[in-house]
Image 1 (cartoon, one colour):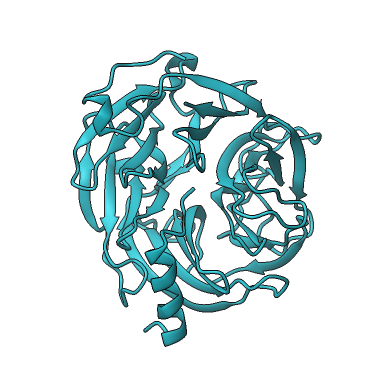
Image 2: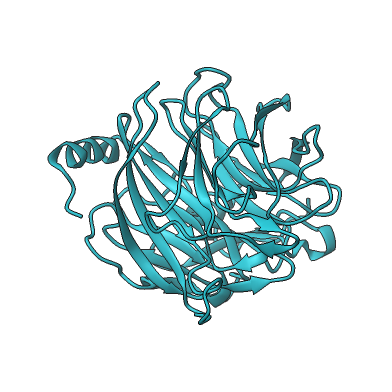
Amino acid sequence: MRPTRRFAGIAAIVMATAGLLAGSGIVATAANASDTFIGPLNHTKVIASTVPANGDVNPYGVAVVPHSTGRLYRGDVLVSNFNNSANVQGTGTTIVQVSPHGKVSLFAGITDSKCPGGVGLTTALVALRSGWVIVGSLPTQNGVISGPGCLIVLDQWGNVRKTITGYGIDGPWDMTALDGGHVSVLLVTNVLGGILGKHPNPNGGTVQRLVITSKPFQTPRVLSSTKIGSGFSARTDPAALVLGPTGAGLSRNGTLYVADTLNNRIAAIPDALFRHHSDGTGYTVSMGHHLNAPLGLAIAPNGHILTVNGGDGNIVETTPGGRQVAFKTIDNNMGGAGDLFGLAVKPGADAVYFVDDFGSDNNLQLFF
């Protein structure tokens, strides 16, 4: 769908001011530290446990609050939980809020959503300046995927105000956003295409662009929806429930970077904000080497791409040109495999927030 003049103007202003939302044992870097964002970072510390009173575990999504409003405080970190207290995947219903100093509160316990099949909060989590928080759900019942999922819209007090279904949403696994104030863009990776149907499609992963209204105190509505990526590998997995296109990060020039987990690559979709059709699986920025089933993804202040591996405990820094300039181990638990998901750069600091869902850890940590 061709963007309206109003939306194009807002996007141009936001892009010009770089108003983008993303999202220990140390191994030597692969390049000089001065050329990298994570090169000078050498420490990790636990900020807080992300387990709320109801016992939800498996922290997945990470989003930094950009503006104080309602119960949201600027600089706090929101974390979504994918599993319930019995560690059943696709049944987590809570978002916790963690201050930079480790104070924890429950931002939302979602029991009244109209999401098809129930609630299981994924890594898809964004917080907008207007106070709207949007989280993806890929639910299960009795251990089986129970529906295509949805996007759940919460106000600044943590109340469910809207459930977005359809519009190409099919197992929302991760998400990033361009926050334009009154109008915003959601870029959502989906993993269920072809998995639930009668004819399995091993390449049913997609990327969907939703343009929404996002004015304060006015419930968002969808203005348009466009599939901008398709053909990504996706399949069910006993450890992660589903594997497919995961982390997403938008660069200043409008290129969307996607962690193509199963193909062990970082994909790029140019002109993500305004393209009128799917770019398929995009072009390969980087593949293999230190990438090991990349999951979470964020854009560093220097424009480099940060990813955390599902196959080990490493964070990897890659340039837009495809050069892997640094990697470091931030999780040593049993090699770190399968423990790392969402991540976000800490505003105004050379540091990265990440979640660790190993065993009883289930916490938010800072790499600095």
